[in-house]
Image (cartoon, rainbow, N blue to C red; front, side, top):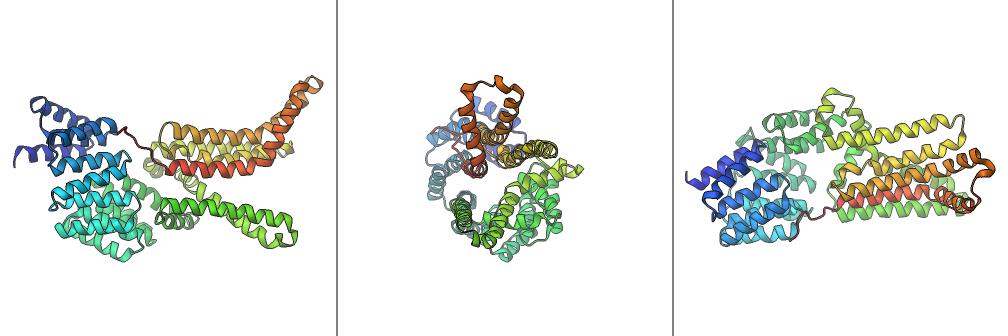
Length: 437
């Protein structure tokens, strides 16, 4: 084993153990003595990318490519760094450069397949993974990526066969167990899936893919969640643009049918059930995950499986629903409190998306929309209460603008709630670049 291979094995072992700081320390010590080592700069870039220090990782990967532009491994690492930073077109260009320099490494074809899958290009991802398997039929990364592409293409039996073959070669591969678990989820075999997710986490405790699988399998034990899960699994197979267009189209159809029902009352008995079904479907898919996470949070094992962001989302949703319930109970004695009860229920829609979005401005934008929906429902009631308490002392200069704003809130509350949810979905789907090129 040469020096490069020894360093590589040591660093990859540390990364797999989650000891990123230790890996970075060892590489910086090595670079102090070998500052021109393109290989060490590339390995350091991988460490920094694992730590979500994307700009530093990009700089180190660029240094590696600059030191050895004819080394395919440097281009491969730069591709990994760019992909982790949501720069997928550039990542694809770099891995194609690596493949152009060396077509004998299945690892490079696996990275190309991974990028295609990130871009939801299922067939291209399948083709790239199969090219990698032609180079090395025993490459488990390519086998796992092939299985993911097959699942997205609806070829579940082939995916399952691929994963079982990979497990026969390496029964201790955590990724294979996790992907087999997801394949079983697709088949509705939730208990069998749980076995493989547990095994994946035993082998690799920090594997997020398996943790999400555990949560999904737990929620699927509730029969009410299964139709929602089937919808999610179907929607995953769609390109994000098509999925978003479908959501917008369904909302516009809802608005059109609502207008028809108002203009032609004789059609209302036929249209109203469709509108009710749409609302139930939309709300259940938008709130399904946070509500069932709330159920899981009452279970000791479920609490351990939930991430910090999922727990925060659960708390936010539970708080919003609690306020809605408080207003609903109050409406027994003060009927006008029914409006803020409905408003807080609607505000739960965007609030449930806050911690799914990227940290920073995206989260603040979604939180702001949730607060806006809450204000639109509470303001008219608060205005009436304030005017009642102040009586003749209510400032006359505020009466007309406040009344107009209250009327605007009442008329547009539902539209604001649905619109904020659609905008929240758009913000979540959009993955901003994490580096400056």
